[in-house]
Image (cartoon, rainbow, N blue to C red; front, side):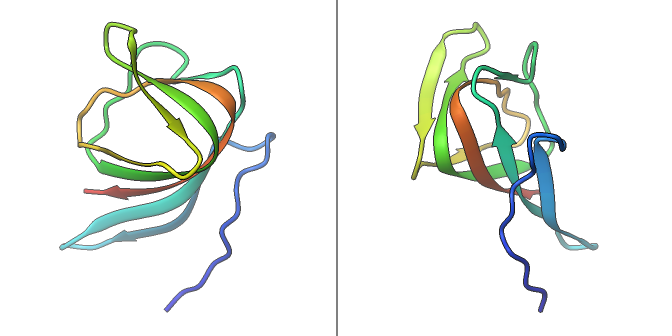
Length: 106
C-alpha cells in the first residue's frame, strides 16, 4: 500500500502532477492532479487525443469543453465527473482557475 496526500502543482510548475503511475503487463493506470489558470486554453491550439481513457473530477473551477469545430460542447464545473474515451478529441477554455483529479486507464 502506498498513501499520498492530494496536492496540486503550483503556478510555477507544469500544470499536471502525477501522484501514482502503475504499469505492468496487465494494467497501465495513472492518477494525478491538474491546476489550470483562468484565461488559458488547453491545449493552446488544436485538440489533443491520447491512448488512455480518462476520468476526471472537477474539484474547483469551470472549463468550457469544445467540439472539434470550436463550438461549445459542455461546461464542467465543481463537482462534475467527466469520462473521455481513448482517442477522443479534447480541448477546453479555462473560465475560472480550475483544480481537478484525473485517472488515465490504458
